[in-house]
Length: 211
Length: 326
Image 1 (cartoon, rainbow over the protein chains, first blue to last red):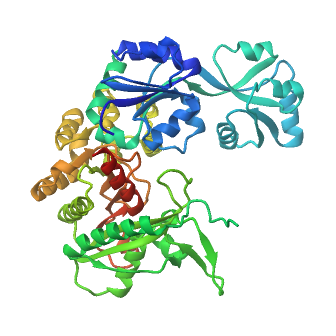
Image 2 (image 1 turned 120 degrees about the vertical axis):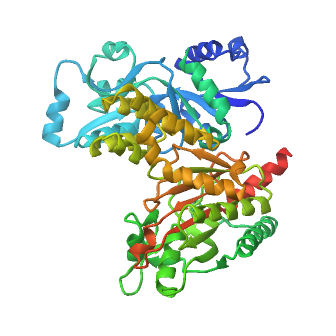
Image 3 (image 1 turned 45 degrees about the vertical axis):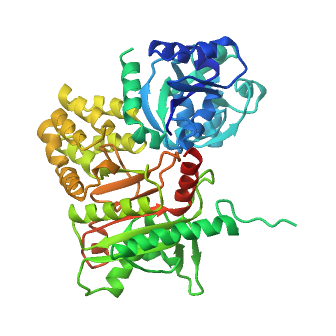
């Protein structure tokens, strides 16, 4: 936990905005823009590590990196991981929603008659907690790929998923029924690093906040 | 043939065991040097006894029935067993009482680096010495134990269990609203904390004080900074921590302590100062503790108390990590 601060950078949808954010606080991200196959980029001030967003809480909790950027959706799903959520980075905005087939209220009808609704999702813990919290029974089915397929193919009555524009839902004849949470990119810190590297982390958070 | 052991438990072989034994002896000798006598209590307690100390049985996770149908629980830490022991075996002994232990404890955890279902703790309990002097003594012993283990880079996070709640009370925040804010704090979620504080409808200076307070950590100057931010509301809430800071300065161990105004620990029995122990070689805490001035009273012997426990296996990992970097 000495040497340069280690920061996890999420691949995928948050990647480009995260690099811009780093540049805006004078952390050079050019090495990550260089199309290299490397996963770790070291400089004198900071070590940047790229990984899947859903791995970020794992690395941060274990202290393998000091800081990381990931989506609130990931943090909600991995709520039991002890990480400090420092700041809302205000990009990667999207919503965690419950969606069912457009028009007909077949899901409501099924829930009334069968006492439970079948929900397909990549976020099984978030979905289960949401339905439990609102006093409803749901059979949560975890899928890894395109969740929109599940209601179309008859695997589930509805889905819980993340949507930014709603276009994918629309193209698959699904519509939003409930919004579970607004999500965006967050900066998280390891519990020990948050204490032992307080001044460096506070300085960075302040710069990001003032961006 | 291979035969399994339960996840989160492990076998320890001679090379590792030799080092662990050495480390354990070092810790116990340090505790003894400060006048803490070693005690040994049963691995399992009646569940009722644990519940007497903490309504959630301090996180006990493994229960079994004995031949008479009584519910036994594997102890989740040594604090409640020692409170029981003091109330029962030392019912009329003159305080203060000083005990130390080297014991396994059991909790349900997700097995991963540094987390075990069965783990070895070395710690002290100081019974009958009130804050701040008792707290400072326990921290002094803790520092000596870390030094003896060669963990000179380790630091102690020091907070106060009631600080944030008291600040909310001083600002006349309603009880239900306090719950939402404290939940966010317990989750270490400063984004949600700010959102919840914004909902309270306080004036700007109070709002800023509440949002900033749990993020303040560093030397004793953070206490002054908090008072600067929150005026009288914070000044009252933080007086207990300030007294502790003075007592620590007198012991000459301020350098090792990080005052952390956002520190919360999840056990229900803490009443004042709370600690966490950090080492730069490890991303997890290597120990924790605090004051539990009400716990002994629940066993019929009201005495102020304070203790700390170190996770011996994690200390060992930190030792190895420190040597690797050195």
